[in-house]
Length: 380
Image (cartoon, rainbow, N blue to C red; front, side):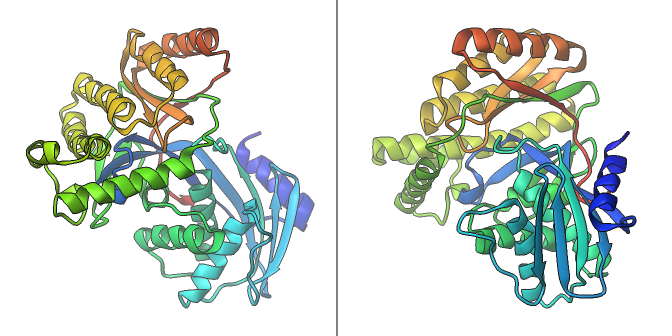
């Protein structure tokens, strides 16, 4: 039985009758461009073939009834009084937040019954929250016939997470979940919100590995790194580090405090690596792309100082396995996932190396996801 059939069964058991539609929105992995987003820079994410799905049916009233098939949990609220479930965010708050933001933007919503299920790994840095938001927006958009383009949908998903759920995030996650395209990555200019689809090679796969290291330090470290980047931009007389070229940085480097210089070096060079990686993909030069991924990891390790010994070991295992073009940590840092570009025929060997060598070196059990680039939010 496929996932849509299973989700339809959950819907029928909980709400009697069939859903009107099933929608989906994907998670994502960022191929390169780490911590560049809040510096007005460039990122290169890819929507992955793991998603959140919602089977939904319109109601004649303003009631929204939700059922999480994964958690076997219910939630009900009225569109006339949308509030947080509790002090800490719950799965239902992402749907409630979307309803709240859409209505505050002036959209008229119909109530709905909805059964929800997903296979995006939670707490692994693959943006299950953005997938939930975009799936909910897509369900409301289709059931209520909303005139809502993919860019605005992404921005409203970000607002729901920032303002209703209370989690600070940039635009990348919602943007790629909304605008992704099969067999392509998406170059995003985080200042202008301009974007460009970049073809992914048919001869390679993207391997995402959850290190099994939960990212306990990421919030405080994120705020500290962000402040250091802002200080560097101020000292160099620019609005954001996006405005600093590698040559400009080298001219100013000696006048910056040591830690600030290291942080700025990562951001300035990472922006350039991201742009260079797009050109490498357009040329079909996977070896060049892999070298840029490797350099990105070294920069996060040495200059931004957000990796860990176990993450470094996981990346090294992949880099040293034949058929792996390059590998790096992806995400905020101090744990989470790695991402690698691997020759199609070498995927089994790379997966085996991860599953045998990483536990032997660290005592941790990884989860490996072999991914393809997929379409953004829409009908399932």
